[in-house]
Image 1 (spheres, rainbow, N blue to C red):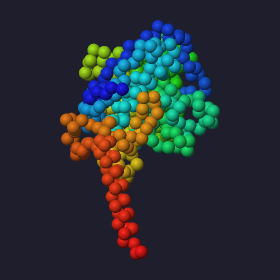
Image 2 (spheres, rainbow, N blue to C red):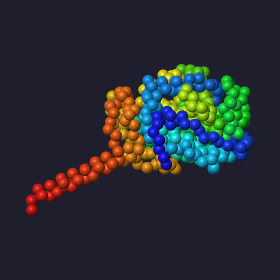
Image 3 (cartoon, rainbow, N blue to C red):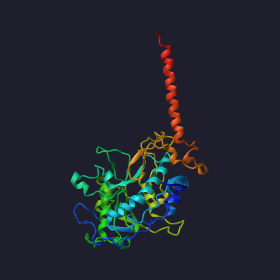
Image 4 (cartoon, helix red, strand yellow):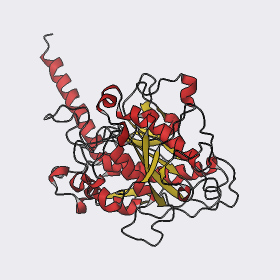
Amino acid sequence: MSQSTQSLLDYLRLPNPRLSCKGCRKGSNTASNKASYRAPKEIAIWEDFELSALKAINGGLLKAVLEQHYSFRDHSDVPGFPFRQIYDENSLEALLIKWNWSVVSEALFKAQMSNRDFEPKMFMVRGGQATYPESVSQHTDKKRLSFRPDWAGIQRHVTSKDQSDNILPGETKLSSKWGGHQIQLGDTKEVSVIENWFKPIIQIFTYCIQANARYGYLITDKELVVVRVRPRTDTRSSQNMKVKSAAERAKDSGILEFHTIPWTTNTKGDPNSLTVNLTLWYLHMIAARGTEIKDHYPPLGELKHEESFAISGTDEGKEPSNPHGVSQGTEPDDIGFTRDTRLEFSDFSIEDRNESTSPTFGTSRRKRTRGNQLEDRNQDKKQKRRQSAKDRRRQPK
């Protein structure tokens, strides 16, 4: 697979492939009128979800990361047949894995490897690769499977089942069955749970509540709809807040905020627009550092260290366990598996010509190529053999 060097921002702004959904199946969406599903009591626009606000997060940290140059694998050559021909959700997800997942996963990996603040690392995976926190879900194993979304955002926190909690649920839908333009704003008291446009809203709202995840998304062959969940203000009585968490109160009376990004955004190279891949990257990055449902969220552009990029797993004032920021994680390969990348740091190095001078990124470090690392290991082995030989000579005969 060929590679190209460009900024992370330009890579995430590459246009999506053109799709054909002429054979897409029509009909109703997944039933969401079961007692275990929860509907939001109100729907609103996520007003401040825009590129300028996202760039301002944590004093512009993510903006600085996006300006870095890397060597990227070229995923843009998506064959017209069979990937661009969409017939159902399954064929759409094949395209999403081939294109969007590949691009976003590589972008997440390289961005998080370049900065020590991005720990623990965030991954975009399929829903079956994640589980829900036991403290939130009280259902049996059989019922929990019915709440498994199509997509998940996970970090490397291993549970008893060797899976990580889903902190960013996502769901795939066909545009022939549902679209963001159908969403009705305001109070949902008079909306029936069997209305077709409302079913996906109930579905993603339930997934977010179930996982105590403030963010989620719905993706179709025509758009990406990002959502944020919180309780309504009428649930914030002092007594109610003492006995119920924000997630529990959102379950009883919640607001779902949303923002839509068209699939075709940036086909003309508009530098001020969000693309689907750029939005998915941002969503995973901010979910990684602040995911629990709360009563109130600061404006998106004002997210600070505590709400966004706190270094997890360390005590305040102490250095993280990996102070130099070199990745100890895994890199997704072309078909979704992972391989150890501790000896492949050179594949994901920041270009020398564009190294950051910001204190946030620390002083620039000499790039380590795979050859350098193997040479170091050989030198270590030679040194150990020499020392061993000296020790044997010193032993009395």
